[in-house]
Image (cartoon, rainbow, N blue to C red; front, side, top):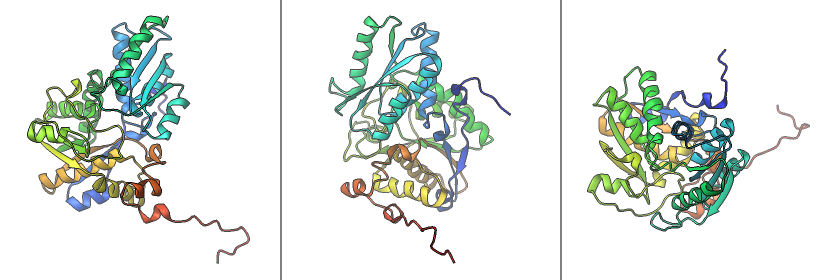
Length: 346
């Protein structure tokens, strides 16, 4: 039996799961890396651990110090988890539009939560910029210091995936991986896995799956930042080249609307027992597109980022979906029936 000395030792080494419907539809083997099985229930645990360890190595964190971050939720949850295990405190700045489930998870892990209006990155009160200013202010008053995690431009984020995620994918596919695709929030996962896999085999094809409202699909296909529409997905979508994305170029770029991704999310629940968030739907849709571009017989890997229960009040709420003009699966509106103990079953 394996015994970990700390919860942080349980981060990583998540399994690959064959996605039956996507594989059968394309003639390829499409594998989802089950990042929801990390202790913080998302892929962001990896970046959180690497960013904190990098700050320790640089002498920026002392016992009892404070870690500040602006996040849509999952990175903050990962930071709060790792910080609690290592004796630090966390202050998380989050857009008020994010799901209540993620806010509750942050509070349960002991984070101090600062909710702010959701405004574009160019606005000085954008949650990312505000978190940087808050960290600078706290650094002046906190006796054990304070740091800004800065996931978007802290390349320890990308390094987490170069050193852990990519080698795990290579190992678990026996080196038989032809393509990798995922969406971008900070860019650490996509650019890090791309660097790690390309170092093993330069012919591995890398793709970005970009939701509506994000600008990287346009940037990588036209050279100009542009976007249209919007998405109910959280934690993905980017309008600039972050430090984690510097030097990265995809082989393919896909724009995936919610109307394409959500049926995939609902199908994973109904047919494969996988309840994942909206970003996973974008990723699997991207994997299907990459598989069709490469042709049958290839192995494509993507990221199953987090559990769907983190978005229950939105993604799995029929009223919310209907208000956005999005598809509502029949099983989500089915009424439960309680059978009284006295009612015969036969």
